[in-house]
Image (cartoon, rainbow, N blue to C red; front, side, top):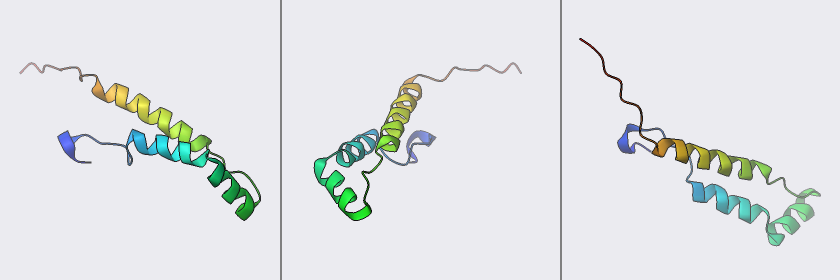
Length: 70
């Protein structure tokens, strides 16, 4: 997390994507329905994946250079 002195999200983009895919799987749906009586909400993983993608796009763009006159 400390590479290049930049803040990073707590997980990688692939982690959010794989968690979303896992939560939509039939095995996970069956387990949650059997255990809790309802299907899990997977939308938060999808939202987090989208936010991480947006963050990665913005982090790749070079920061504007500011000159200070002394």
